[in-house]
Length: 190
Image (cartoon, helix red, strand yellow):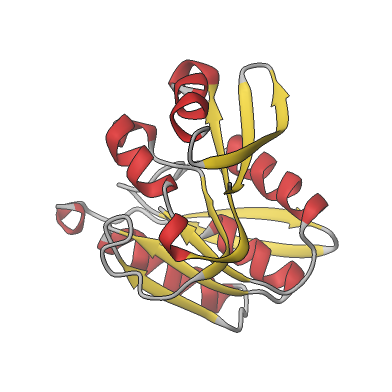
């Protein structure tokens, strides 16, 4: 479906911790005209808590912003996963553009093609995919290493409180950021 769109590349600059990034985006991917503010907040909050090399899965990676930034700043091994072929092509381009090492790219609908386990699973989930898909994407307990964490960002009006209630029986939740209707949540296995 996403391969039938004409391409119209856009180039977005970003700076974090003395690193300069440049991302290419295109029609048919989330936040093609500017780097999504929620993704920026998620990365910044994540880096406050995790600045060491870990194995990270960026699920629903889009054009790879979250995973590429984490990889460059922490030297983490990152897997970028998305169901969109166009997004995965952009991920490949952005890995090369930003001279990243230790990044793999996987076409996967949630965890359908994810075979490994990770220290961190991170996502700015696609709210337009619906609550059931978001729950499926965030419920990565079977793909976490011991003491692994799931990080995600969600708006209050996109179901933050219902997701907190849903996951609270399965995970230990910590709201690491809550301002102006934006929630950044870290979950660990109970």
